[in-house]
Length: 114
Length: 113
Image (cartoon, rainbow over all chains, first blue to last red; front, side, top):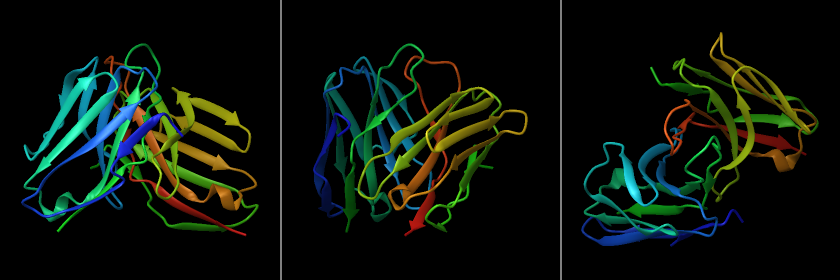
């Protein structure tokens, strides 16, 4: 295991539901990321937190709302999603400083919007 | 034009074959080049990391970067069925404290026993 866990692993939700994805890391890293992975497409960076501060919002629709309450946890709150939001949502962490580039990924949450 | 282009495959080879995976990119600011491997139902994991141009070898894996051509490669020698996965190239520039990576779309590789 990479030290990054994500729950739930699978989620099916209707377009009017509200749900949250959770990411937890045990690596002591300072940078945390949300990515969206769709079939045959590159990983899309959604949000970046560094030292608990949001440093990047990659033009993500407001129906996705991130939260980073502490350095170990990252949430992605979902509401009124669209079917095209169905994808694998990956959380990743990195040291957040210096020259290291390695990002450690969780196993992802497979989201299906019906 | 995408910043990073990667042939999605799928690529299917017999066990023992040499595999060549490639990416091209357009952003000349990229200095750091990585290959991630993603098994089914798992998140990506870092396989190889190279700074600037040159070669790097790690066991059966060799990463090559040609910045003049904006072209990177990953070679797998003596491929094994356990190498069956999706391989993602990723790149980054040199600025920023929370490093951001730009990924290719991934190449799905199957090594047949």
